[in-house]
Image (cartoon, rainbow, N blue to C red; front, side):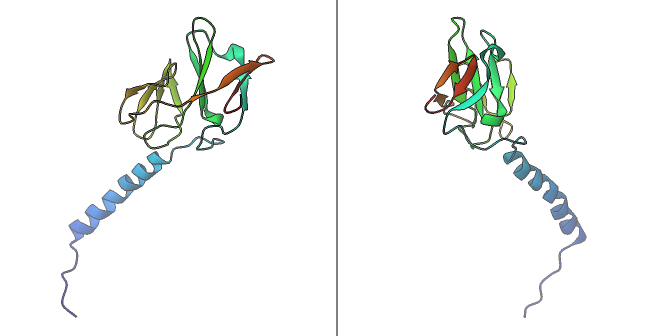
Length: 141
């Protein structure tokens, strides 16, 4: 068996220092809030009262991976909040801007359009309706 040089102390320490950073990267890509799923609704889901969404604003429903917006005419729109870049659940809404925690893609909550890459595809629109004063979103809504 050929003689192999042993690793220097510096090489071992350098490798050990890189492990926590690598682990952080993996954790950031798997960010998901407690009680959330990693997919948009596949059936109608009740989100909350229609009064929760201000005119010209948006509300993020993290538990269902949906954002609902309301335009000046009172029309509601809903979009999936699963990022189109790496399928991470988006968990932050600032005004009407959605921010993905994995790679910092940004989307317009009113239109689903990409505001900042790395995502290049808009968020998919979902059907949304009001029934009995409650917002219901998802296929079949």
